[in-house]
Image 1: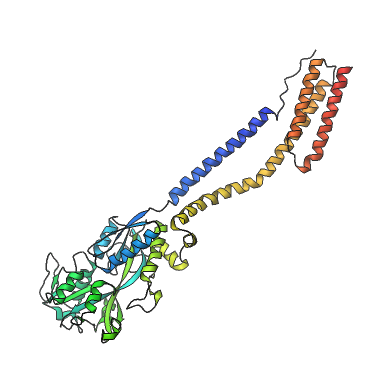
Image 2 (image 1 turned 120 degrees about the horizontal axis):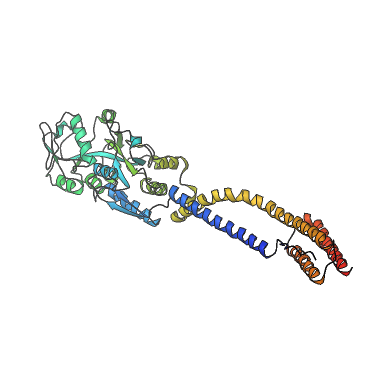
Length: 459
């Protein structure tokens, strides 16, 4: 008797294991793909840090008061803003350059000079021009309307070393031909005033007590020291004749007007329009500041600096993109053109950043999975069709093997088991509608082979 071949029937336990291996392998690859995407997104778009440091100015100055408002607004968004007081804009700029702080207020005119690198090559960027900073010159009786020469030999509070206040005061005094020395303690030179280090409320105290003759102060109209001196009828605020000419000499200065009665209409203060020079305040950041924090700072700037002050005509005057000395940040350019990013407009700050990262993962994942999703039904149909055709091949083999001779009882049992396996697989497999006619034909073929094997055994 010819021995029975060891025919391996596919599609039963071994086939199921293969299917599960494919499924598990695909799942593992998908997980690895998602993890790899998260790693790439984490490098390209990391989550913003939960805190940043801002350098402001004197504790009683306008910069620090504005910084406190920024601190409050950022805290409401879940970001901690640490404030560091300073001598002024020059120290703020040094801290930014040395990577000691991430953001600072810097007075117009303070920044890269023509002899230094171009602004766009510096690691610093301006987010916005946030306010006017007038140059206030307060005196008792000295008239400086026609020029600052009247301050020669007088004691003048001009600010701390390292402050933008002192730098601008010296620039203005020198343009009027006065020699100004800079050193420790009181600074004096021939033909010039004696400059003291007094600033803020300390300078106001000394001026009101007549311990000094004048104060040159650069601050916003809302600064407490400015409000204090404007409210004192014994103190004179200088109105300069040369504001137009001086603004031509110093590109970062512009003429502004403090209108009559704008400080105290009831007492007609000031009693006439005052011609002032003003620089601007730049909100400056390091170039590597996270974009989400840049947008958060710009939103805060809108809240802090948007209200109309004594010098602004329209609420839209500040903040704006007309920065000086620094290149405008790309994020700020997009902000002033398009406004707050969509997600940050409608979602809490941190949720918006998580959703943004999720989108960055899902978009490439969808680009990979969608084509696979279109191929998958075809692959499944092809696999079912190939399984159907394989059963036809197995039946042909059984028919040739077992119907060409007389079978004993053991051979008939083995053949019946193989036919039952094929029939069971057909019953357990869900075939698409377009294959149902072939499935029906296959079942008929199974019955036909079973009958032939039975006849072969009975002959």
